Length: 255
Image (cartoon, rainbow, N blue to C red):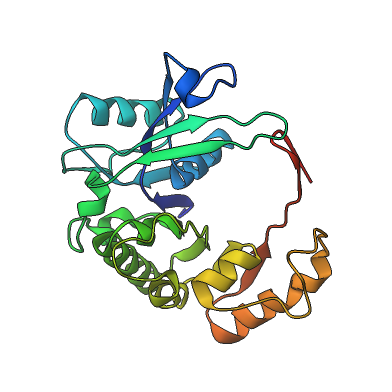
């Protein structure tokens, strides 16, 4: 039975300060691996759902350590391809009370940023799969990553695989000459389920909530239904839209 989930994205080396220290204060970092789509894969594996993670990582000890880390969570890694010179890195300063968390990226020229269409055999990847999940982070990395993501979506559509996307707009990533709303519409056109908040919809698709002041500090979930309706009207293949709403109390607590 086809029940496997496929996720595509960039996984990075995460260097986090211990004990809520700020980056200039810390003399050591805790090394782990992480990425939005890899985290989804690990969560699905934890629920007992078969899942393969697809990415491009360097053929060196860091890349192999990353692959082994995914395997310990039960994530399938045989669809990952090797290439490129480095794994992206991000430094994390965990927030506390009124001080928010801070991330410093060192991911330029990472292995997946140099990916091109044709490098991954998507027909083989989707054999036995029922679901493909991607996020707006991948097409933000580079034109090659955006093209590879579109290639995957088109093959998933051709093979009858359900496609979901977390819009996940990250303004600091779109630096290769394209704006988010230049690239995302073509990808969402082939997507069945969309997740995101009102900022994601605005920046990725040019769709805004009707009658809502997002700066007022109140979360009125019913008012955001207009975003979902607009997305589904503009993109007929989209069958469901999930809106995420959050209000922050402090760095450690949210509604």
